[in-house]
Image 1: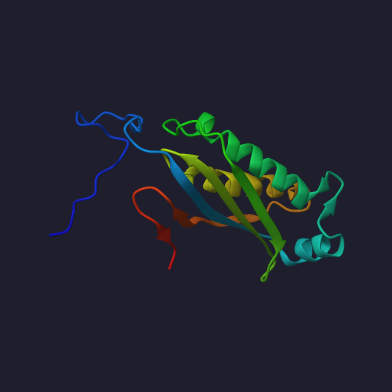
Image 2: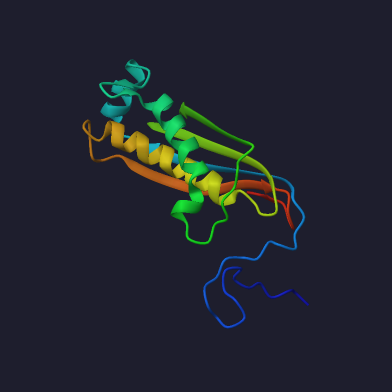
Length: 161
C-alpha cells in the first residue's frame, strides 16, 4: 500500500505551522533550481551585442548578486522557511537558445532542513532582476519555467526527470 502524502506545514489541528526540525540530525543538503527569461528577438539581439551590458550595468553580474542575496533572505520572504546560514550559493546565468537567458541556482547547507526554497528563490529573484534591468527595452519579457531540478540530503533525494 502506498504511503499517503500530507502537507508538511499543516499541523494535526489543520493549522498552518512551521515544521519542527528539532529532532532531526544536521546533514549536508543541496538543491538546484532554474528559471528562464525570454526576450523579444530584437531585445535579445541587442543584449547579445553588448554581452548583457545595459545603462544599469551588467544584467548577469547584477542578477548573480541579487540571486545570492535573495537565497540568503528566503526565510524573510516565505513565512514558514527556517533561517539558514548557507554554506554556499552559486548562480550560473548564461545566454541560451530561443532568445532566452538561462538561470541555475545551487544552494548548499549543513542543517536539519533542506534548501529547495533557497535555490528556487535565488533563481526567481535573479530572473526578476534581469526583467527589471531590461524592462526599458520591452515589457514583452517573460519569466518562465521556475522549477526545482534536484535536491540531496534529508529524507529523500530528488532529480527532475
